[in-house]
Image (cartoon, rainbow, N blue to C red; front, side):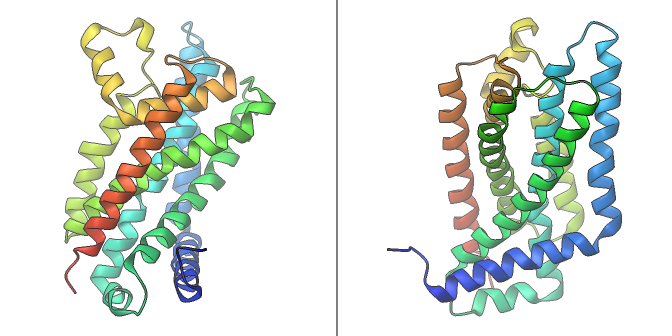
Length: 249
């Protein structure tokens, strides 16, 4: 038996479609979201490879970073709907607010997956050697990691009322979490304090799992990556759903 009624499935679809239409129409932001990770690939991937770095190590991290940053922007859609009054219509609609959360999350993750596919192709053209049979499970891990980012973005958007504050949260919370994770830090060679910080970061396990599936490399056991990343996704979505329910009409 479905936990959603037909009306709620329609609400999920409408929320998802709204995110997709808004993404396509914002051509400048869409172009930037596709081009910026390529610059990171060139700078960190090819640049560090010349200094003894590993293209296979850095590429999964950049792919994951792109998915995370795109998914966090689900919160921005809440901010826009607050600003222009559309959110009020959603909150008074005869459907559960959970359906709105699920629809927005699905839209953000769908956008992230298009970027992931694009960057995976670019990475392979740049010389990264990925395990082809690991691509499908890696996509599953990317979805889990993106769900964590969606939950964080929507949680902050539910309690923040202006765009400037949301951008600050993105810059001082999400970006440091990405850079202080296994996306860019090799735990085996990191200083003791940095290793501890990386291990406490939930993004580290999702990114490490992606790297496991794509390259066979990994800092933690794969089962631990899946367990911690999945638990973090559940907690993040529960938190975002609870805070979304508390939004005042």
